[in-house]
Image 1 (cartoon, rainbow, N blue to C red):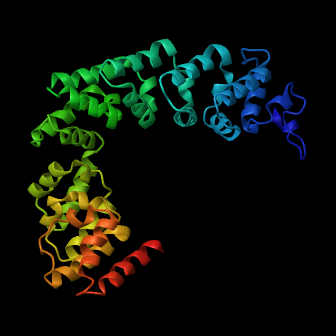
Image 2: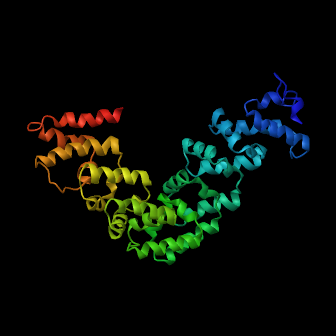
Image 3: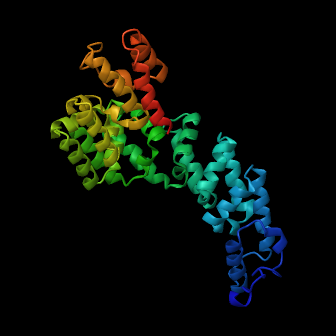
Length: 356
């Protein structure tokens, strides 16, 4: 039907009532609106007025024209809702629970479908459930910022998962930690969540410890194939199955790292530095740091100090990787400048690589 309009220099919406009012909305969205108008699929007569009202409403809540355009591309159905009856109550509610303007804008742009979820059946019940966990309003804002999908989720699903944690002996403090730091866990299928909790307990985790929650999070987010591939990488550098499990218990998130990051880090520590893989298994958090920006420059300095007998050969990785740059320079560079003036150049060589 549009072929007759799509000649050079013509807009398919020229002559369409209210064209001048909606010029800020992407052409594709307005073309769809035009088709709906022609087919009789449009519920409100003055659609162009409604589009403009919605645009003004979103601008009144601080959204820019660019953000509104992004919404129209991601979720064009927003511009078919009634501005006062459907969209405004959601905006008022989200503002009333303590979301800052920046957070509110980010949520609406990234998840505009929230504006179509039922306020009475979805948003308010989910918010009340979070309050009754109990979780402070400040933490509720953190949860929504981390995963705004939780507000539009079936409240019975969230409640079932919270109850599952309680029935399996997980303390209230850990449940609150889950909700704030890993809200995606309570959006899972309840049976899957229970299986992951049981598997975590079988690996020797204490349900009273926050590491238990992190382990559940990792197991729930890992397929069997992905898990086995990462275990193989660790074992390829000389770790046993038991040592891999020990590393997981020490820092569960070490199994969230990509295969590439695990491989590059282990290769450097074991093959370049000549350290036992067991050392890395004891402090797997060392693998989280950027190889070029932190690990290599600092390890080059430590290697020289170890060769000179100025630091212990088996000192912990985190004692020098986990410090700030200022602390590292004071403890491992400036301290030995009198006897090893080349240390600063060794460290700078790594920093030059970093900045390039």
